[in-house]
Image 1 (spheres, rainbow, N blue to C red):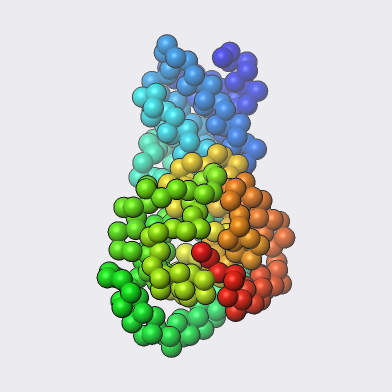
Image 2: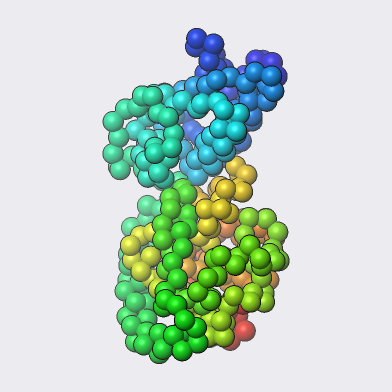
Length: 325
């Protein structure tokens, strides 16, 4: 691939025979797709891919989840080619995001400016809305109070039906891909994760779904149908890892399959409920449909819209045919 074609994506220069890609001021979905294309073209030289690629972040002041996705995808491709990715002159806003998402532990960052948490980006208006956060805190406290009332009967039912712990926790990806532990009442058998590879996935794309999953216990089906299994997530909301309303929180292995544009769904915090939960939670089979619902939420978001989705969720919870299966 010629240097001229590469420069149509990003300015490309060389430093001691190492290609240097100069990143733009903003690294959002359109720029991120071009960034991935540029790196892919450089690494496509089968005979002699470069030993290292330098990423010049000196001009980049903003990065969202798509930009993070492009970096992750490029890192995987480079590692497969035994090429090093070196980040230089990383600015404080970008450095804060890389640190928050844990990428500073795996990326080679040669130089950067001092940074602080105050540089975290506002990838979506909902992320910095103090009113939304206040609603989350109040809702989480009310939810945890209600959970405490029915906690004992749920515990007795789970224990009587299946041996194992009361709670199920799993690593999920939140805002910008930051990992956190999500909590639920256990609705599956004790070794459910080990058996997952044996279960047929009825969904297409980067998420898992099986209507008749044999790992789900008898009590677990009731908990899922009534959404009672999700009550411990009020703790995740109170901590700030999740919101009452947002997008479905994916697992790391699901995110690993994302194409760059699909990372846009991580521009907002994941929610206990959202468009996916109130519009076909049990019927959506195509991941592209999930993406459309997530992006629709981001486009239509307002505090009133959140309240409407919460109200719809409450109605669905009391409809015994609406829960997860």
